[in-house]
Length: 73
Image 1 (cartoon, helix red, strand yellow):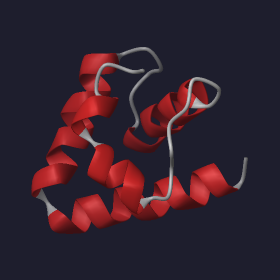
Image 2: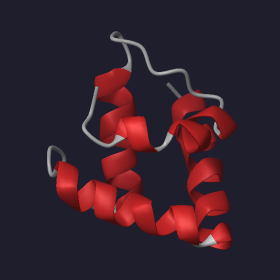
Image 3: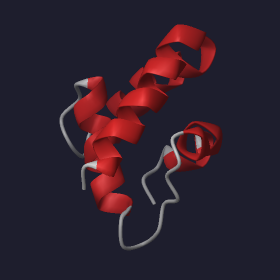
């Protein structure tokens, strides 16, 4: 799994996303796109996601966008 997935099970659960070996790359790409960080820049993506854990509005926006983005696949 991506290096930061283990720190955000609550966000992924709230978004209705169960990360599997088959979809982990797709989920990772989606998260990178949502936070505006180049794919494979794990530390940059985590830094952006980590901020959403402390900011309720930012967290809700991330969950909403994850739901929307993942359901389109």
